[in-house]
Image (cartoon, one colour):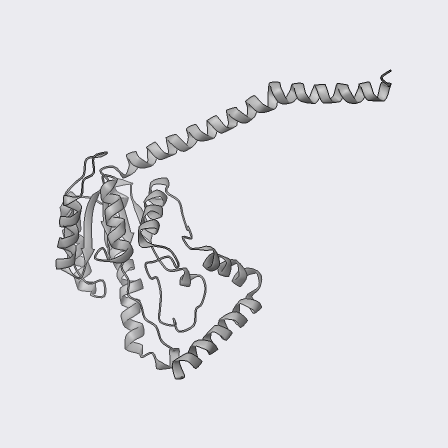
Length: 274
């Protein structure tokens, strides 16, 4: 004979089974379907936004800039490749033109050669850039130079050179391009910098706004940059686990962070002197 408590328990189980089979699972599958549809629409919107968009890439001769040129070219963007080495830019343009991309229509890249550290060259380069297609949709400030050394050994000339190329140059170029974007009420400016812009690292005193994400391949970062531009995201960190954790450690436990950095500096100094 089944007791009242047992019957009550069985009834609860049956009710839960009924709810699960008739409500929760369909709801779950519905949510998955809606999310998948949202991601598909987001992907289609991203591809449509980038196709035929005029994209300026500084520092396109090597590293992340070169990889960004490849992925944006494959997405159907109209590229203006910028850098100091014209031969390297022409080689990249030939490589892109020879690549086989069947999904979208591609466009022959333009080349504009100038040095970001030269204010006068930026004015002339901006006029040449705007002549290529008449407007700019996306400006990717990628160019930059690196320097490694102790503060006491770093001359002011080095500091000035790094700041001119990595900060004042991109700012000047952005200001020169910005009026054309404002006039069209359309534009996207990307500032690529190093994780070191958020955390201090020994022997990088003069170093700012470098164009690579620590610990990752340039091609992987370039694909992420493409997706970020397409989705119009802001302030995105593209780094491996350890550098990302360092940012949170500096915020949550600054004393521990600076102790670790000081220890690292002492080890590197000892290795340098040995």
